[in-house]
Image 1 (tube, rainbow, N blue to C red):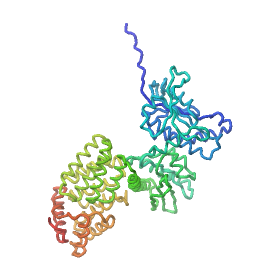
Image 2: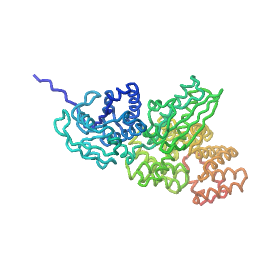
Image 3: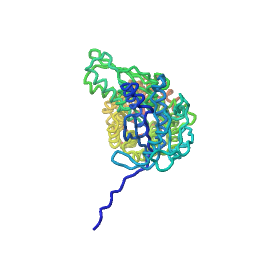
Image 4: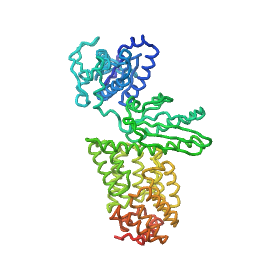
Length: 595
C-alpha cells in the first residue's frame, strides 16, 4: 500500500519590512479619534511609497504593517523614504504628539500560505522593528550584506542581539541619522538617494468652478482619464487616483505634496461651464521649486461630454508628454554623471527640436550612449531607430536604404522583446511606409493606435502612406485627425508638410502653398518644407519668393539636391512617381541644383 506523500511546503526568499507606530497606545489615549484619522492619512502616503518601490502589503494590524519586497535594496530605500516623509509630516507637531514609525527589515526564507507569509524570515523582521528607535530603521545582517554600497546611507553595527522567540542571536545594523528629540531619524540619509522617479506626477482633482453638482462627474472623469493616459508615457510614474482624490477640495502646498508622494511634478487645474461653453485650465508645476512649467486652456462649445472628454485628454496628454520630456532633459543637462534614462530624455528632446541632420545626429548619439550604459533600455533602442528612420526619410543623407535597414533591425529587436510597444509598432510602420510597403505600414500604425490612442503621429504616417500610394486625396483627413489630437505637437510641421505635398500632387497649388508656408512657420529649422514650398511657389510663377525659400532651405541643409530628392522615392506607384517628377521640375525652376 502506497502511503500518501505530504504536500510540499512552498517557500521563497523575500525581503520583509515590518513597521509599527511607536507609543501608539499612548497617542490613542491622548486623542483617539484624531490619532486614528492621522494614521489613516499617513497610511495613504505610505501605501503609495510601498507600491512605488515594488512592495506588496501582506497585512495590516492596527498601527502595524507587514510588506514583502522582491529586492532588499527596494525595501531599504522604501523605508528611508517613508521615514523622511514622516519626519516632514511631523514638523510643527508637539514632540509628545508626533507619530513615529519603527521599521525592521530582514532578508530571509518565508513560508507561503495563500497571500500570507510566515516563518522565521518574517519573525526576525518583526523583532528588529521592536528594537528599532522611534523614527529609525534596523536591518538584519543578511539584509545589510546585500545593500551596503548599493544604498547611499550609513549604518552602525549594533552587534548580535537576542531577539524574543528567535533561536539564535541576530546581528543587527541601524541606519545612522540625525538625532532629533532623542530619536534616530533616517531623514538626512534620504537627500543622497535619487528616490524620486523620472516623469513622476500626480494629477490632482480638478476644481469644479461654479460648484454645479451636475458637472462633478465630468470633472472627476477628466481627472481620472488624465491619470490613466499619462501612465502610458515612457518612464512615467503616476500616482493612483485613489491617493490623488484624498486631496480633493483641499488647498494644498504643492511642494509638500511632492515630498509626501515622492513625485517631481503635479498637474492641477479647473473646469468651468458658462452657458454652452466649457473651459478647462491646466497647469504643470515642478514640485521641488514650485515653478509653473506649462499651462494650457481648452475652450469649446459643449456637445457630447464623453466625446469632448476624449478630445481633451488626447490633446493634454500629447502636450504634456513633450513638456515633461523637455523638463527631464533640462534636468539631465545639469547632471554631472547622467544615467541611461537621462541620456534617453536628452536624445528625445533633441529630436523634438526638428528633423534636421544636426538634430538627428545629436539625438542618435544620445540614444546610442544610453544603450551602451544600459543594453536593456528598450526606449533608447527605439529612439536610435527613430533617429535613423527620420534621417532616411528627410532626404538628409545618401545612405537612405542603410538608415532604414538599421532602423528596421532595431525595431524588430524591440518588438521581439516588448511585443506591445506602441511606438515601436508606429516607427516600424513608418519604415515600411517609406520603403514601398504602405499597406503593411498602415496596419502597423493602426496597431500602434490600438495600443495607445494618443499616438497622433501614427495618424500622420497613415496620411503620408496615402500620398505614397497615389491616394493623395485621402491624406488631408488623416492629417486633420493628427492635428485634432495634438494641435501643438512637436511634429505638427511635418504633418502640415505632408498635407502640402498631397495638395501639390493634386494640382491644388494655392492650398499647397498655404499648408507648406504654415509648416515653415511652425518650425523654421526644418529644411524639406522650405524646398517643397519653393516648388509650389515656382508653379504659380512667384520665382523670386521661390528662390528666397530655396536659399533659406540650403542654409539648413546645404547638401540638398534634386538628385537626392529623386533617389528618395518611397513607392513604385506610378501616380505617385509622376507627381514626384513634376515636383522635381518645379524645384529645378526654383533654383535647386540637380547634383
